[in-house]
Image 1 (cartoon, rainbow, N blue to C red):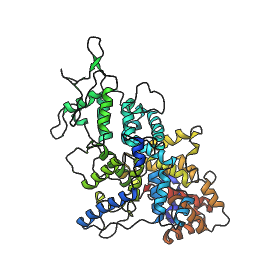
Image 2: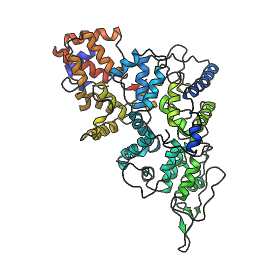
Image 3: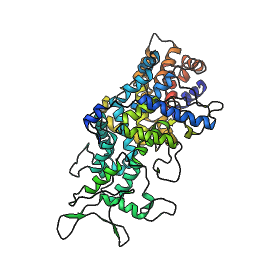
Length: 520
């Protein structure tokens, strides 16, 4: 690496091309009387199920990851950024047997987790808000969603609120975002609802019956009809819902994808169809609702879902782990659709805490979950992690400053990924990270707090300074093989004979490394 840094210094960096607030359907007294579900117990059941599969496949799981890798992984997954040096040192130095569970508990109750989870669900439910056409809706939805999560509103109630929001609820931070992102069009809302909340892909049936798909064209438009406005007969009160099928002379009435059908009131309001559909979608016994949520959360933590693709739970392909999917869905529904419980249980599993290293005899098939996946960072994770590494505020308290939120969004849009588990950085993204102003500012001694503090620290040896940069960027100390050439490079001062600039080059290389740019 020292030789590469020397070349880089001579030719320039640009030459490198590389909780009780919402209680769901149960009453407050019923939930208060019941003991809270045990996340550790569910974690143990998950591990038991996976272990049985590994034994059947004759696969040896990876070793448990060490503390430095775990604290970095869980911070990225739960709060969307790498840990600070102080957080790494405190966790590694903690000798408590339950320190991993304690860290998870603290993070899932943090404001940073609510904001990060809000961004996750926005992308799962409203991927179209990443496009310029819906600029502004992303922030609006995430602000509203973060408040719901902070207040402990359960998953089923959140979904029901999105589907039944009153059209009068306008303005920022309202649940109307889901309907407005679908442009209030029944066909858009039917496709978005079934995909996002059920993992059912009806899109292919919108224009015709697909020869290989399960769903028919009539079923698509019967689902869309729930979002139609009631029709009136001869100026009387609304008496029916129906929707014309484009390019035909037929109209269909609302009908659920499963039986039995809902009971309709005599008088229909504007939201009657949406309410009836939402009641069915979020019901505990819906065959898709809980499974879809569990599958998406699982894919977020492991890079691969228990069913792939995520939007095709009703497809021909069987789940990779059908028993595990069913058990997780039942536990999630039985908990009252408690996202905190589900998140905690998954992050407490041994499977989640496995190393990402491949060893002799180990499994390479990601569907076995026998080792941790290497996942790309979202644009927001990368931006916030760069700032944390550079010694900037960890919790983004400065987003209220003029231009701060805009700069973060512009950066995140440039580094947007479809699925972190399969993310491949483009050449343009790599060049933007290596040569962009954000990275340049964070790797300049005069503008990066962490780099300046390290460079000017009189009590640190050169080896200590290199170690400090490794801890800041990667959350670990360098190995002897890594440290030795870098120490020589810094002491030589790089191409300019300036040790401070040489340290900046080392920091720049670390921030552009695969290790920094992935969750592993």
